[in-house]
Length: 206
Image 1 (tube, rainbow, N blue to C red):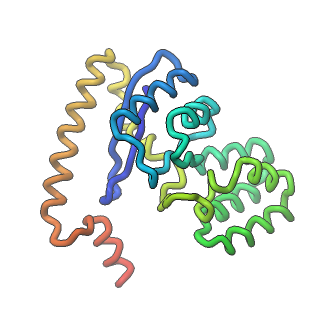
Image 2: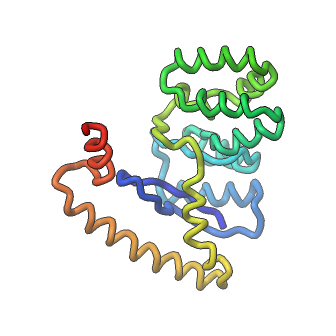
Image 3: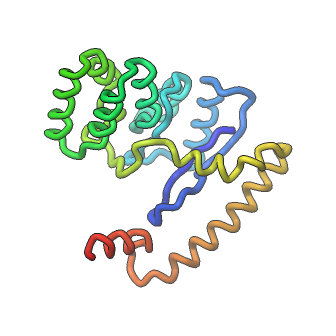
C-alpha cells in the first residue's frame, strides 16, 4: 500500500492519497507519484518528506522535480546510529536538524565536525537542505519526520488483512466519518485559527 499523509491546521492527520502496487520499487513509486500529481497538481511551496528510499528519490526526481524532497529525521537518525554507533552523534543530529537559524545550525555543525568528522561529511553529502530546518527551501514547520504515516498504518493495522476491495471500502467509510466531524468542529470556531492553534496560544500566554 502506497500512501501520502498530511496534517491539517488542527494538527490532525489524514490521508491525501493512497494506492496499491505489486511491489515497492521505482516503477511503483513513479506510478503513484504520477497519479498523485494528476490528483492534486504541483504546489511550489509544498514539501514531501519520506525515508531514504532510492526508489522514492528517483520517482521524486521524475514526477516532482520542482518540489523539495525532504528526508525523515527519524530514519536519518537510525542510519547514523547504524553507521557510526554513537549516541552523541545521534543527539547532535536531532539538535542540528531542528535548529531554526542558520547561525545556530553552523555552530552545531562545527561541533559535529569536531566530535565525528566522518558523520559530518556524511550529512553534508546528503545535503542540509534535505534534512535540516534551517536550510530547507520551503517551510517545513514541525514536520521533521514521516512518522504521521504510522498513525494511518495503526488505523489500518487490522483492515490491511482484508481483501483489497473491502479495504478500499473500509478506508472510504473511515474518511466519510472523519471529514464531517472535522468540518462540524471547525464551523464552531469564532476565529480563523483552528482549535489546536487557539489552545497552543492560550497555553503560551498563560
